[in-house]
Length: 444
Image 1 (cartoon, rainbow, N blue to C red):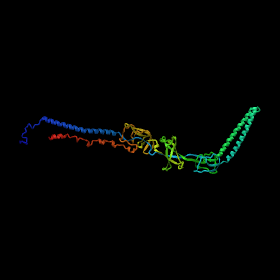
Image 2 (cartoon, rainbow, N blue to C red):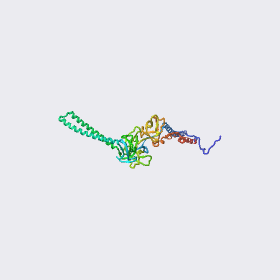
Image 3 (cartoon, rainbow, N blue to C red):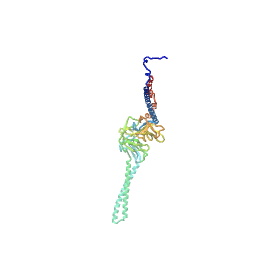
Image 4 (cartoon, rainbow, N blue to C red):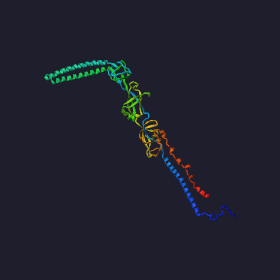
């Protein structure tokens, strides 16, 4: 058997080829300790992120189990453009003129459209029967006065004879009674005479106030009956100033007061308006329409406005009471009453009955049921009930844009994909350098 001798090994002895056992054990133990420590570090570094991700995923899953809702808060505001309310134009005062005397129309002096002054003569009535009655009444009054004078003279004489004892007491009392009777008759005939004289004055039909004649219903020769309310002779209206009446809805009624000024639009001419001053209100709400009657005074010195015209009163936004507004997509239609879902501070839903007022298109007036600070759910689901736990979306919905706020932010509330460990978040390969020291030992 041949022995190979390597260069430089001639001087080595067999003892030098032997390794110290204690030294070898210490080196091996050191390698095991270092490798175990590195392996433990790698396990810790790799396990903690995964554990945290699992905890996050569990929390996200629990959070996703609670439905996410968008909410709005009721807005206390006024209608953006105010109110345009229908109105009626009426004269400041008007009167129907009827006859107070029987006869025939002798003449009429004014026609429709005529401007007249107070006590101006409008027509004359011929009353032949009244003239005869007046003559008879004058004769009766004169006769009654003569009888009264004679009764007074006779009574004086009889009272003197009674005191002288010539006549009895009964006769004296009869004379006194006769005088009293004639006194009453004289006064009655005098009153009848005055009545007929007053009837004669009614032959002249005059204007009760200054204004415009708007109707004439008689002609010359017409038979006129006294106190016949079915036969109007003339109609007169005072057209300066004018009264404008309109009705304000009950919620805005408290904001209307005397002295306020509103614009009045006549007919379809919206380019020109007239200022109307609030004179008075009815101070009561009609049970039929739930509105309050308001009276305006409008100057009409130029006679530009015709009584009876259709008008529109513009009530500005500043004069209106504030309304509580909610989007229509917050209302829940169940049963007899409208409801909304309100989220409290603990995230618990409470269904409340609300009373809705006017409808403004995409929004409605809320009369009762919610307050300004309540969080009302937008687009509530059919399964929503009182006591349901919900999670309010991170970005609160704005009541001014209910359509956008009604979309629930589901994508932002589903972080499940981020909870799934990805290759970039698994540090196993980057934190497992333990085999490198053992490789070097093996090489040695």
